[in-house]
Image (cartoon, rainbow, N blue to C red; front, side, top):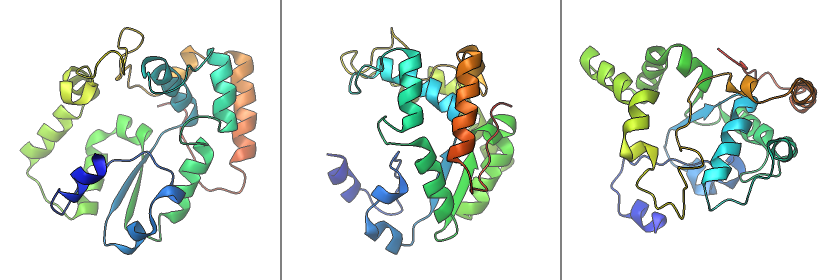
Length: 205
């Protein structure tokens, strides 16, 4: 199991999770670990999540795009409300060694974001190594990499004929999917849900 694998992995360990902050075990906050959180604007997340639900057979059928968008805004999707997720981690960012990053910043200036991570981890790498990191973590390279694109996963679990796991990797793709009415409704819902928060997102770059 994943838990057994973690127990057998020597420290320092790298753990990736999609869990909201409230579902992490209490012991997690007592340990001297570091957290890197990556947030993405909700409109692109909704579209990306819709296509992921189509191809990932573990999740229930997403229904129509309009139906899924309503469920997304209501938080009736796996892992719950996007608003609770991003705000929950944002509010904890000063209580722990945490680096809060934004997908849109990564798309605009990946080198700057990699440098933020290196500084946060207290690492110094050569220029050549940083260039290799930027190359291998680019969307184009990851889309070709079987270790990143999940193409080795059986089609009974992930159907890449419906949608690739790594689909577009751009910011602002929601504009190709939202109707004018859906965008207006989403904007209103976003404003209401984010009242009182100083957390802001770029809807495109």
